[in-house]
Each structure stands twice: as structure tokens, then as C-alpha cells.
Length: 140
Image 1 (cartoon, rainbow, N blue to C red):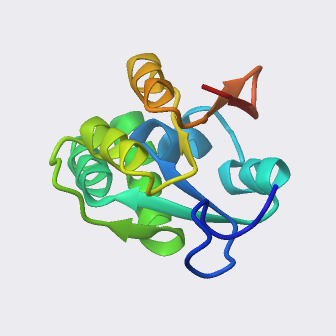
Image 2 (image 1 turned 135 degrees about the horizontal axis):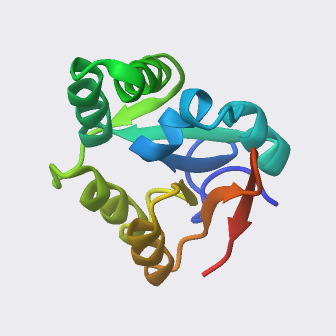
């Protein structure tokens, strides 16, 4: 796999990978070592999270409980490890599809089947959980 952006512009940082809410909650909910798995699959990558995903995680974290804990960890991961980007869409799934359709990401990580289908329709590969705690790439 080549590094850099598909159109040849931008820094050589590897694949641009957009993470959805479910992906950022995987470390707590599913015991998935998210960034280790992405490193195994892609070697070099630039994790990205739409602002709408960060906001959704914040709202879920406020609810408390197990889901709130997972969302709180996901929110921290998004802030600390991802490039947070603004999109026109305010709904998290729509923001990820927008990034995919506009060619701003090379992969989207999600366990959400409807979102996965929309991203694949936009001709962008999806990374999702396969098995108990491993991620795998699905090509469009």
C-alpha cells in the first residue's frame, strides 16, 4: 500500500482512517486494541474523527453506566489520538459518509451495518470487527 493521500497530495502519513462512535468504543465494549489492530492492518495511518462523532461520544458519556464509560474512553481517544475534523453534516454517520464521498478518507472503521453499507456504496473500504477481537478490511 502506498502512503500519502490517494491523489498524491499531502504529507506521507499513511492511510487516512475515519473512526466512528462504535469503533472508538471498541476498546471498552469489545476488548479490542483498536490502534494496535489498525497498525497491524495498515502499518501507517492517520486516525480521523469527525466533530460529530466526538460530540456523540460526549453525549453518550454523560449517560453513565457501561456505555457511558466506553463512550468516555472513546471521547478521550478521539481527542488525544485523532485529527478531529469539521464536516457540514452534524449527524455522526452522515459526517463519515460525507468524508468518504468527498475522498477525504481512505478507510472508515465501524461496526454499524447501515453505515458500513453507505460507506461501501461511496467506494471506500470499511474496517470492522471480524471474530472476537480482530479487525478486517472489506473492500467496496
